[in-house]
Image (tube, rainbow, N blue to C red; front, side, top):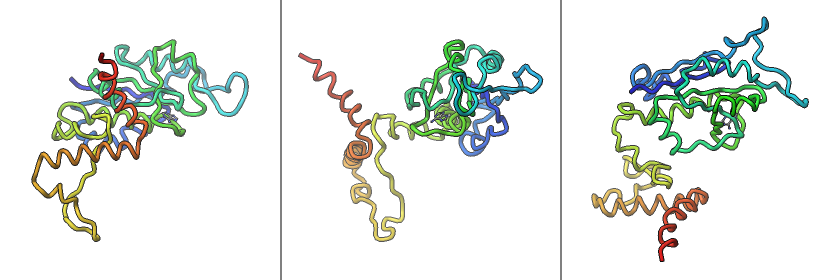
Length: 236
Ligand code: ADE
Protein backbone atom coordinates (compact mmCIF):
# COMPACT_ATOMS: atom_id res chain seq x y z
CA UNK A 1 0.00 0.00 0.00
CA UNK A 2 1.26 3.47 -0.86
CA UNK A 3 1.03 6.15 1.85
CA UNK A 4 -0.64 9.25 0.37
CA UNK A 5 0.46 12.60 1.83
CA UNK A 6 -1.64 15.61 0.85
CA UNK A 7 -0.29 18.96 2.02
CA UNK A 8 -2.41 22.11 1.94
CA UNK A 9 -0.17 25.16 2.11
CA UNK A 10 0.31 28.70 0.83
CA UNK A 11 3.84 27.66 -0.21
CA UNK A 12 3.58 24.43 -2.23
CA UNK A 13 7.05 25.20 -3.65
CA UNK A 14 8.53 24.28 -0.24
CA UNK A 15 7.69 20.59 -0.98
CA UNK A 16 9.13 18.00 -1.20
CA UNK A 17 12.15 20.05 -0.06
CA UNK A 18 14.33 17.90 2.19
CA UNK A 19 11.87 15.01 1.83
CA UNK A 20 13.02 14.63 -1.77
CA UNK A 21 16.47 13.43 -0.69
CA UNK A 22 17.95 10.54 1.29
CA UNK A 23 15.72 7.84 2.75
CA UNK A 24 12.38 9.62 2.26
CA UNK A 25 13.33 10.73 -1.26
CA UNK A 26 14.19 7.20 -2.37
CA UNK A 27 10.73 6.00 -1.31
CA UNK A 28 8.89 8.97 -2.86
CA UNK A 29 6.69 7.78 -5.72
CA UNK A 30 6.70 4.14 -4.55
CA UNK A 31 6.32 3.73 -0.75
CA UNK A 32 4.64 7.13 -0.51
CA UNK A 33 3.29 9.94 -2.69
CA UNK A 34 3.21 13.66 -2.00
CA UNK A 35 0.69 16.17 -3.32
CA UNK A 36 1.19 19.81 -2.31
CA UNK A 37 -1.79 22.06 -3.04
CA UNK A 38 -1.93 25.83 -2.79
CA UNK A 39 -4.71 26.92 -0.41
CA UNK A 40 -4.95 30.12 -2.48
CA UNK A 41 -6.33 28.07 -5.39
CA UNK A 42 -9.54 27.83 -3.31
CA UNK A 43 -9.95 31.58 -2.71
CA UNK A 44 -13.11 32.92 -4.32
CA UNK A 45 -12.77 36.72 -4.42
CA UNK A 46 -10.97 38.66 -7.10
CA UNK A 47 -7.99 39.36 -4.82
CA UNK A 48 -7.58 35.64 -4.08
CA UNK A 49 -7.56 36.45 -0.36
CA UNK A 50 -7.07 33.60 2.11
CA UNK A 51 -6.93 35.58 5.36
CA UNK A 52 -8.58 38.44 7.20
CA UNK A 53 -8.12 40.52 10.36
CA UNK A 54 -8.81 38.80 13.72
CA UNK A 55 -12.27 39.20 15.22
CA UNK A 56 -11.92 41.24 18.42
CA UNK A 57 -8.88 43.05 17.09
CA UNK A 58 -5.19 42.47 17.59
CA UNK A 59 -2.12 41.83 15.50
CA UNK A 60 -1.73 39.59 12.48
CA UNK A 61 -4.12 37.86 10.14
CA UNK A 62 -6.24 34.71 10.43
CA UNK A 63 -6.79 32.07 7.73
CA UNK A 64 -10.42 32.07 6.61
CA UNK A 65 -12.56 29.02 7.46
CA UNK A 66 -14.44 29.11 4.13
CA UNK A 67 -11.26 29.01 2.04
CA UNK A 68 -9.71 26.30 4.24
CA UNK A 69 -12.91 24.22 4.05
CA UNK A 70 -12.88 24.34 0.24
CA UNK A 71 -9.22 23.24 0.19
CA UNK A 72 -9.93 20.37 2.62
CA UNK A 73 -13.01 19.29 0.68
CA UNK A 74 -10.79 19.04 -2.40
CA UNK A 75 -8.52 16.46 -0.69
CA UNK A 76 -9.33 12.73 -0.28
CA UNK A 77 -12.13 12.46 2.31
CA UNK A 78 -10.99 9.11 3.75
CA UNK A 79 -7.65 10.37 5.09
CA UNK A 80 -7.11 11.67 8.64
CA UNK A 81 -6.70 15.46 8.80
CA UNK A 82 -4.05 17.24 10.82
CA UNK A 83 -3.42 20.97 11.24
CA UNK A 84 -0.15 22.25 12.72
CA UNK A 85 -0.47 24.75 15.52
CA UNK A 86 1.49 25.45 18.73
CA UNK A 87 -1.86 24.90 20.57
CA UNK A 88 -2.10 21.31 19.33
CA UNK A 89 -1.47 18.01 21.07
CA UNK A 90 2.26 17.19 21.14
CA UNK A 91 3.27 14.78 18.37
CA UNK A 92 4.46 11.41 19.70
CA UNK A 93 6.08 8.34 18.19
CA UNK A 94 2.89 6.41 19.04
CA UNK A 95 0.78 8.79 16.89
CA UNK A 96 3.40 8.66 14.12
CA UNK A 97 3.14 4.84 14.15
CA UNK A 98 -0.65 4.95 13.90
CA UNK A 99 -0.54 7.39 10.99
CA UNK A 100 2.18 5.43 9.16
CA UNK A 101 0.06 2.26 9.44
CA UNK A 102 -2.85 4.03 7.70
CA UNK A 103 -3.55 5.06 4.08
CA UNK A 104 -2.06 8.56 4.37
CA UNK A 105 -2.80 11.98 5.77
CA UNK A 106 -4.06 15.45 4.85
CA UNK A 107 -1.82 18.10 6.42
CA UNK A 108 -2.97 21.68 6.83
CA UNK A 109 -0.19 24.25 7.16
CA UNK A 110 -0.99 27.67 8.62
CA UNK A 111 0.79 30.98 8.36
CA UNK A 112 0.04 34.33 10.01
CA UNK A 113 -1.69 34.20 13.42
CA UNK A 114 -3.34 30.87 12.64
CA UNK A 115 -6.59 29.24 11.57
CA UNK A 116 -10.17 30.35 12.16
CA UNK A 117 -11.00 28.09 15.13
CA UNK A 118 -14.30 26.92 13.60
CA UNK A 119 -12.52 24.87 10.93
CA UNK A 120 -11.24 22.20 13.37
CA UNK A 121 -14.61 20.88 14.53
CA UNK A 122 -16.37 21.57 11.23
CA UNK A 123 -13.94 19.36 9.27
CA UNK A 124 -12.82 16.90 11.97
CA UNK A 125 -9.24 18.16 12.11
CA UNK A 126 -6.74 17.10 14.78
CA UNK A 127 -4.44 19.92 15.96
CA UNK A 128 -0.83 18.84 16.38
CA UNK A 129 2.22 20.65 17.78
CA UNK A 130 5.79 19.54 17.20
CA UNK A 131 7.11 21.27 20.32
CA UNK A 132 6.87 24.14 22.76
CA UNK A 133 8.13 26.84 20.42
CA UNK A 134 6.53 28.88 17.66
CA UNK A 135 7.32 28.30 13.98
CA UNK A 136 6.57 30.86 11.27
CA UNK A 137 4.30 28.32 9.59
CA UNK A 138 3.21 24.69 9.59
CA UNK A 139 5.28 23.60 6.56
CA UNK A 140 8.38 22.59 8.50
CA UNK A 141 6.16 20.81 11.03
CA UNK A 142 4.51 18.90 8.15
CA UNK A 143 7.94 17.84 6.93
CA UNK A 144 8.81 16.66 10.45
CA UNK A 145 5.67 14.53 10.67
CA UNK A 146 6.12 13.10 7.17
CA UNK A 147 9.79 12.27 7.74
CA UNK A 148 8.85 10.40 10.94
CA UNK A 149 6.05 8.48 9.15
CA UNK A 150 7.85 7.70 5.90
CA UNK A 151 10.87 6.06 7.56
CA UNK A 152 8.45 3.52 9.11
CA UNK A 153 6.88 2.51 5.79
CA UNK A 154 7.72 -1.00 4.56
CA UNK A 155 10.80 -1.00 2.36
CA UNK A 156 11.96 2.52 3.23
CA UNK A 157 14.34 1.83 6.12
CA UNK A 158 17.02 -0.73 5.15
CA UNK A 159 16.99 -3.00 8.20
CA UNK A 160 13.55 -2.94 9.90
CA UNK A 161 14.95 -4.18 13.24
CA UNK A 162 17.23 -1.12 13.54
CA UNK A 163 14.17 0.85 14.67
CA UNK A 164 13.18 -1.39 17.58
CA UNK A 165 15.59 -0.14 20.26
CA UNK A 166 15.62 3.50 19.33
CA UNK A 167 14.46 6.44 21.41
CA UNK A 168 10.74 6.44 22.31
CA UNK A 169 9.97 2.96 20.91
CA UNK A 170 10.75 1.47 24.33
CA UNK A 171 9.51 4.50 26.27
CA UNK A 172 13.16 5.30 27.01
CA UNK A 173 15.88 7.27 25.25
CA UNK A 174 18.21 5.08 23.26
CA UNK A 175 21.60 3.99 24.65
CA UNK A 176 24.71 5.78 23.25
CA UNK A 177 26.57 4.54 20.17
CA UNK A 178 30.28 4.32 19.31
CA UNK A 179 32.38 3.25 16.35
CA UNK A 180 36.09 3.04 15.45
CA UNK A 181 38.68 4.34 16.16
CA UNK A 182 38.69 2.71 19.61
CA UNK A 183 40.60 5.66 21.07
CA UNK A 184 39.80 9.12 19.71
CA UNK A 185 41.18 12.33 21.23
CA UNK A 186 42.00 10.34 24.36
CA UNK A 187 38.44 9.02 24.71
CA UNK A 188 37.99 5.24 24.66
CA UNK A 189 34.97 3.19 23.62
CA UNK A 190 33.55 1.56 26.81
CA UNK A 191 35.28 -1.77 27.41
CA UNK A 192 32.02 -3.73 27.61
CA UNK A 193 31.20 -2.88 23.97
CA UNK A 194 34.52 -4.44 22.90
CA UNK A 195 34.09 -7.57 25.08
CA UNK A 196 32.05 -9.62 22.59
CA UNK A 197 29.86 -10.66 25.56
CA UNK A 198 26.38 -10.09 24.15
CA UNK A 199 24.58 -10.52 27.46
CA UNK A 200 26.84 -7.95 29.16
CA UNK A 201 26.43 -5.56 26.22
CA UNK A 202 22.63 -5.86 26.37
CA UNK A 203 22.66 -5.26 30.14
CA UNK A 204 24.93 -2.21 29.73
CA UNK A 205 22.72 -0.74 27.01
CA UNK A 206 19.59 -1.22 29.11
CA UNK A 207 21.23 0.40 32.11
CA UNK A 208 22.48 3.36 30.00
CA UNK A 209 19.03 3.84 28.43
CA UNK A 210 17.52 3.95 31.92
CA UNK A 211 20.07 6.27 33.55
CA UNK A 212 20.15 8.67 30.56
CA UNK A 213 16.35 8.82 30.48
CA UNK A 214 16.21 9.47 34.24
CA UNK A 215 18.74 12.34 34.05
CA UNK A 216 17.85 13.90 30.66
CA UNK A 217 14.11 13.36 30.48
CA UNK A 218 12.60 12.94 33.94
CA UNK A 219 9.15 13.37 32.33
CA UNK A 220 9.66 10.28 30.14
CA UNK A 221 11.22 8.33 33.00
CA UNK A 222 8.26 9.01 35.29
CA UNK A 223 5.83 7.79 32.62
CA UNK A 224 7.97 4.72 31.95
CA UNK A 225 8.18 3.86 35.64
CA UNK A 226 4.46 4.53 36.06
CA UNK A 227 3.66 2.08 33.27
CA UNK A 228 6.05 -0.49 34.75
CA UNK A 229 4.87 -0.38 38.38
CA UNK A 230 1.16 -0.07 37.62
CA UNK A 231 0.37 -3.83 37.36
CA UNK A 232 2.21 -4.57 40.65
CA UNK A 233 0.50 -1.73 42.56
CA UNK A 234 -2.88 -2.93 41.23
CA UNK A 235 -2.23 -6.55 42.31
CA UNK A 236 -3.64 -7.83 45.62
N1 ADE B 1 3.01 26.18 13.85
C1 ADE B 1 3.62 27.16 14.52
N2 ADE B 1 4.27 26.67 15.57
C2 ADE B 1 4.08 25.33 15.56
C3 ADE B 1 4.49 24.26 16.38
N3 ADE B 1 5.25 24.44 17.46
N4 ADE B 1 4.08 23.02 16.08
C4 ADE B 1 3.31 22.81 15.01
N5 ADE B 1 2.90 23.77 14.19
C5 ADE B 1 3.28 25.02 14.46
